[in-house]
Picture 1 (cartoon, chains in turn red, yellow):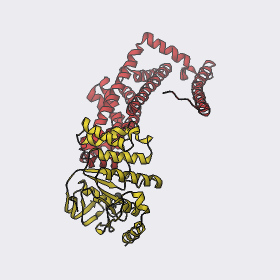
Picture 2 (tube, helix red, strand yellow):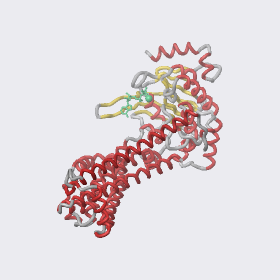
Picture 3 (cartoon, protein in one colour):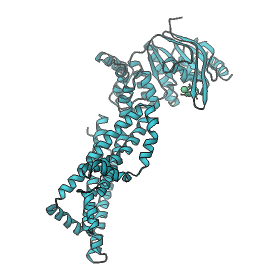
Length: 268
Length: 244
Ligand SMILES: Nc1ncnc2c1ncn2[C@@H]1O[C@H](COP(=O)(O)OP(=O)(O)OP(=O)(O)O)[C@@H](O)[C@H]1O
Ligand SMILES: [Mg+2]
């Protein structure tokens, strides 16, 4: 569809575009400024690059890691653990939330357990997880699931329960069974909550996988960070942290992309 | 009178909550004949919505019996259209639920929508329509499964006054045009007088039928009725009875 706009509207659009450009320039400028300052203070020796590292040293470290220390392997391990843990937590979480929505009795019975599990700092279970799952990726995935699943359950359950009572009444007046209410109403109306849950769960998955690698590390970015800290190689710590930031941001943007696709589909 | 399509025999209903029990209806007795348009008015909180839930079989009476012959279509105060479905898909909803989603039934429902002015909006989403249009779509959705009796729970009260008069007139035209039986709940006296063949006045909670009146107008168009001679007379009578 092609529209012809009034002049005022064209001005409005132009103003918006300009503003967007401004925001992005400022964002990138701020990053450049911070990196530049960091480089400057370390290069001039105002702060000790041994303690602070510096952008150029991080870049060098990453290149070395890539050439000599199998960087991609470590990235792959962490990414695998995070993504698998995330997928399991989200799928299982949604499934359990559905069951709890379905049965009031089950929900009432399990409520105190969920509250306690939610409040419990999952890291306390570290030793148990090592004993049960060993020290490989399995343990870390388990930790990731543990951290993410409660959030997924609580988030989705509250969305399911918040389904408009009048719309349920309407469906019941049409003679709808519970499966139909679920399929036609509860699930579609929880789409927005599902996406916002995904965004939270991505963060939780990273917390879980890195926490897991801190306690049982053999490989992965979390392992590199812990190792770097132990041998006082701040360049390594900073480099791994930087890569972690990039990966986490990447995964978050994938979710945003998914949101765009889902919303578009829902509209057509 | 015509054949009875819905009848309440000494129906009582008690709600139980932890705090105590509320008797929402007590010894309710009335009936609705086929093709009749009955309006029920009553003070707020007296048990009107409860009465409709009983009629639709969504609630079981604590005592007494609800006798009904035919299928129901329920229309609520708000349109309750699903915002993620187009108007067309919204209208097909009862067909999907009742497993009557055949091409023929869909075509019938679509015809109904076109006949009553929704043709251009079939592919629109509910938020793109005005309140009046949405309520009209809600009525077409209610009619789509071809119910024998329409249960209307204050379907106009969420609309502004101007829209309300127009939509009331439209809806009345559609219901009478399709020859449907209707049971309308309202707390708007003028609405009841302008729409119904018969008006029942309920008491305060627990609801009981206090008075029954047959409207004696020459015409059925709500706007014309509002200008008719007897209108203000009926208004005074019902106003008094409602406040007794
Ligand atoms: N599910 C319920 N549990 C307990 N009490 C209820 C329930 N539903 C309604 N009630 C009570 O029963 C009484 C009648 O309610 P109902 O909704 O039928 O009244 P109403 O005439 O439709 O009210 P309104 O004019 O506000 O629409 C009210 O006092 C209400 O508080
Ligand atoms: Mg009510």
